[in-house]
Image (cartoon, rainbow, N blue to C red; front, side):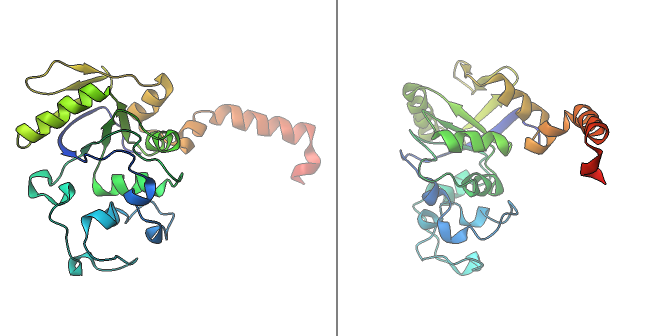
Length: 212
């Protein structure tokens, strides 16, 4: 998993509350557990005007020019700014995979659905909770400053932008450690390799019949 230390990136706004995981990645595209290939169908029902099917060539589809992710000014954005309760609905981890495949590395909102929030950390994505007032001020900056960018310094736990005071944010210490180190659940388990091997060796002595 790619470590997350500092990100300087373009911000794309999604001015909607209660965005559920079926809107982030509609259920018909959940055909794989490989964690790749989902980015083209991120926000599928909003990004396109026709009904998409798995495996369909997106070059043949009708783009919705009124959806922010389709605005040329936001091409390459890696920070998604949105509203309350982002990622609600089902627990599908595919929603985070779709965001990551698209290129999003950080999310900023007043609140996130609990399971979605946890899934972000498991996949190297940083969800930042800020007050509704601060989120509103960032929306205003995005609207008034073309190409508005933010720098996210995870080690210092700050969001930085030109013309604004640094904005601190909270994050659980262990989740911060795993993002900084680029560690998924497997990597966390492997930190205990010596203890696991020692335990298995003792089991072979105490319960040899299990290993015959």
